[in-house]
Amino acid sequence: MIKVNLLASTPGATPAREWLPRDQRSALMGLGMLMLTALGVGGWWYYLHHQGVVLNTRIAAAETELVRLKEAAKVVDLMTARKNELAERLALIDRLRAAKRAPVSLLETVSRSLPEGLWLLEIKQSGPTIQIDGRATSLTAVTDFTERLQNSGYFQKPVEILTTSTEAIDDATVVKFSVKADVVATQPPAGTGTATAPVATGTVASVAAPHAGA
Image (cartoon, rainbow, N blue to C red; front, side, top):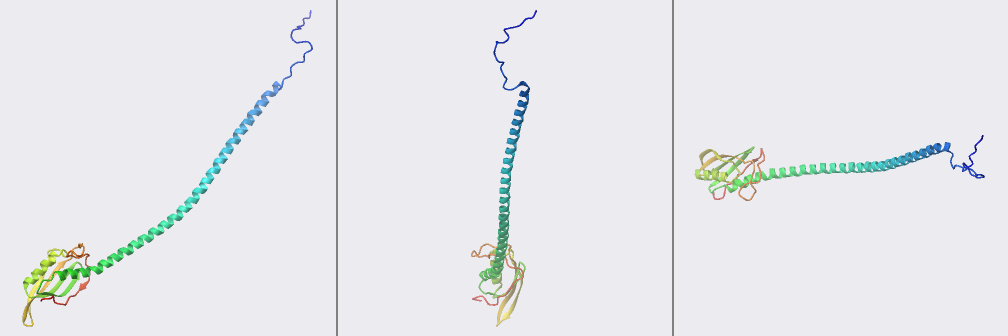
């Protein structure tokens, strides 16, 4: 006996057709995943390429700036060298001025220290040591002279009287003396009765005119 199920299908109806066969669905999904992967890789490559372009642009700009800074550094070094050279020249000029001023300051200080009745014959210098030779009408004038030199601030204390002796000049008896003094290392400003600069080593000054009133 044969049984037929008449309810399984509608008589005369066409079976539904599938849009994509089942055996091709997995292949299509694999192709889609492959395309998505390719798009992702392409996007990542484009991003890296863009970043590389940006970095290369920055590197080029940095290299250009480095070249500019090197040129500027050369100019700065040149200006620094010129500044140092100018400073050395100015220092040399100051030293020369001080050396020229020192004998003048010495003579001004000694001249202000001369008392009445005393005149000088010679001033000699060896390093900071000054030796003054002269004549005076009395021994008191010699001691006054040494005290004024000590109080001038130009010489270190004490100012020594090396020798004193008497001699006759034109029927008059005078005191021949020799005084030694050491110049201080630093002098106060001029105009206060003291000198402005140390005396240059090895200079020799001579004074042969008698003081007024001698």
